[in-house]
Image (cartoon, one colour):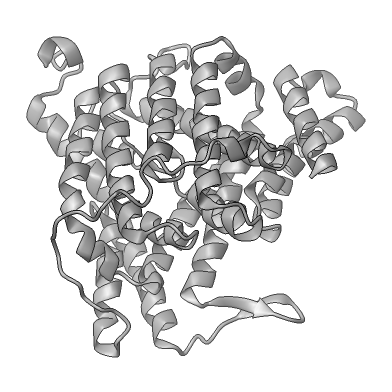
Length: 428
């Protein structure tokens, strides 16, 4: 392990790496509860979705540790799972099998990009303002879903949305759960989100809102989702936008996470490049394809890996330890199934607030940068579509830059992506 991971070179040890892996796992363990619930809304069996989430996170994290030797964990991504369930399957009427096929194909495209020079061309070409706008917009989209699931926001015939019954027990308990998560996070308590979810769920037991089903048991069957993806259905013009969105969000999410976490760990090179970027993206793309085959939405690198880095994690051994903890979590399916929707809604809102922090990096003194970014942010929740928000953001960026006489500042990659978005809007 010393030779393979270079522990001494990074000033770390096996015990420190495992402890860092535990910190990362506790910080991102909420996905074990939240992701199966979101996928269940798409018609996927809850038990199979739980197993797929555990295995996708475990395999993806181990791949990252072995291939890229970075302390970054993987799991099904937040935001993109909501797009999968509520937009692609829910609003568009696509079967969840076809949606999984789209995730797999987008992973294949991501893999092809990862082994070619197109990788740098795309990542470097998309302006920082749009990258940040996409991240924050997905957060806003996630926040709207969380508020809806909590019952705090409801449909209204006159104003589109309105306030729900704030005196109801689920709204009160869920809101207090959010406050608890925020307070624990402010105190730097590891696992603040998962603690908040469990406490919120437990608080609902006296009111009959939570039915406790136990702590541990044999893992549910994966059969309902394993290799159930429908790849043939992807080769339909109506699915092109879905594949494009999965690919673009996967690319941007992973690129942003890799940049942020390696900088936090002190691993970033002096020129600002990410070490072993190609290998890391190969692990990400492989994780996405494996996750789709198992039965879950896109697997991505997790920014929560910063928790393990804060604990001293510096090598891929941290990521492998995270994978081991996710395998152990396979036996906690009854506990995950006991958690009701109102208890996970605060977690969605909390994560949405974290993702909104991306806006602080936008150049607010340049209208040609912040206006397209905010169009992206506004469009995602209000059109209830991540792909629409991304498309409008690219088109706004090209249009504003061109009419402002600054078309030369638009990278070739942005022109290509904007053209693809225009074609999508015209045909679909």
